[in-house]
Length: 407
Image 1 (cartoon, rainbow, N blue to C red):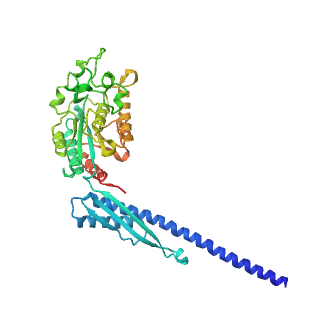
Image 2: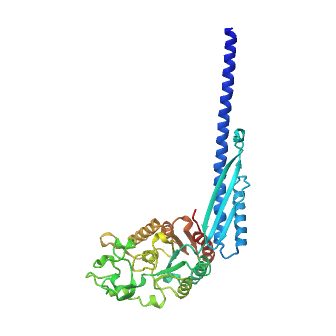
Image 3: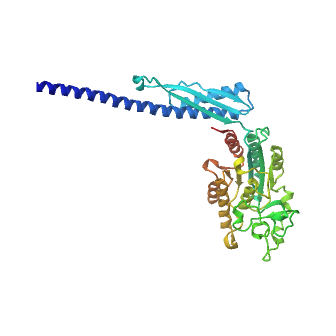
């Protein structure tokens, strides 16, 4: 009798072990199904986002054409993901943008054994069409004398770029500003912002940077604080006329800072500018920061959080002018540091910075421009022979930035 009992006990243990093993295997298999669901969700979402953006960017096409673009983009991206999914997206398309949704029941492999034949996936993507998001672009362009003989190609490429990202001016929500630089920049400012100027009276002339550290901020000049204002001075804080002895050529060459304006104004500005002398990239970047800033002296720009902001910096040489540092130090190395500090400050505020080494044969100069860019993706190298192609490719990337995902 004891022997029979022991045999029964062994049978019970075997049955319990078999049951537990089944549960463990089912749990492991269920984990595989949930892992498949997570991967499938990522693949569908990426395909859905790409499709919504593609349809949103092609606002000039008919609704039927945009629908076809969205469907083709979704199918192509899903196929490239190596996830076998028979999901059917639904697109709602109008002039404002695209809403894309997918509801998909992913068949299970293991969980169907416990009456779970599928796992539901529900996803959505929404993209705003170009023209509905505000965007501001400032071009900080080298017009030093070394650009003679090759600025024509740069100008034509820049015009094409403006046409591409504004869709030939049809996207009126985009504004363009220009800071052409040579040895200095030439600006028209209220006298309140210039050393020795008269508030309410315009001052038009060349200038370099402000004193440190005002020259690495977008702060408005402060009444009574000379260091916060522009205009190079002599030892008695009087504007030094020797600093401006060649400034007459700046307006003659149309090398004046232009505030944010329309597509047409941008084209006119690009067609008018011609080179002068010197390579003061740092002061160009400094003033570009101010044109993109909502703070005076320029006030056309929107607050940073209300518009996408971009700066394109192009130079064919390394910076070679002095800039102010701590303790009124004034040298080239400090100016280069100021340029980087301004770039870092803008990037921290969400400004996308594109830099272009244009026919530049200087490794240190290239490195400085690349460091200033938002990322390596936004750093370009080119010359008069390929700048048009470079800017066309850039235009496509920037157009994608203007049409953007909202969720």
